Length: 285
Ligand code: IPD
Ligand code: CA
Ligand code: CA
Image (cartoon, rainbow, N blue to C red; front, side, top):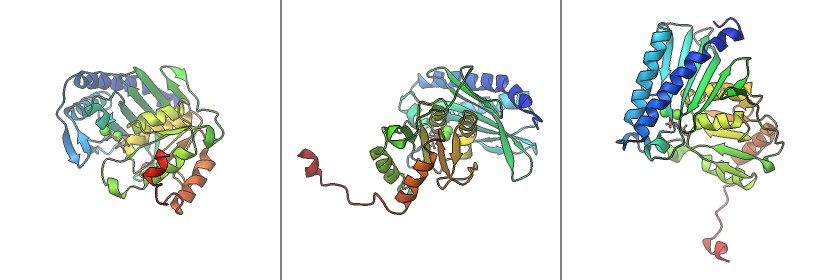
């Protein structure tokens, strides 16, 4: 284990170097016109996703040959280690594939205390389009390009800028459009930028006051959730119960608007917002 937080922190320089190298590779691909392939109806993958994951796995193996790796494109390499990496080589593939410059590399390291349980101890998220590096070590705080960061101090949803995302598969089964509608009416706005890892970074550094999404995968959230927590924020399921990597519900806030968002969600789940939309002729008047 990293028996202490300094040990967790000692992983960060190498993690940051790997994320920067993978980010540079993504930028090379970004400037070319890439062929889009489909994993599902609107679930895209490109050669860049695969090449970045290959590079990241090679670097992890060079540095820590016995560590396990769970990556979005290649799945789990289980070497029976106490350490597991969560790798999203390109978070924001749809943006990337359309030339919209909002995407990142996300890496997290977990120390597994048993087969079922683990503690995330370190993470980095790198946005190569803006050269922004977010890093975090358990009990050592969250950093943005080397400076300590903290969540915002906004106390009400009404004064908040929040973010969400929508899944790229089983879209028809996702109720988030109702949440998007209702929370938009009750806040300064809801951004849907297309990279869950960057959304979590933006909560951690106070650009957003909150973020929620249904059905994220462990590689989307592993680094970003630790970042929000270490920046003083709060992350739970929608009902306030503890967040876990396979929770399928992520609610991350500055802590101050958490209870209010939970109350809103409970009401939306109970049926508020399911009324018929206004007649378009109403808008014209
Ligand atoms: C996606 C992004 C997006 C979120 C989707 C994720 P990907 O990850 O994080 O913001 O809304 O649910 O799948 O596929 O670009 O790595
Ligand atoms: Ca992702
Ligand atoms: Ca991805």
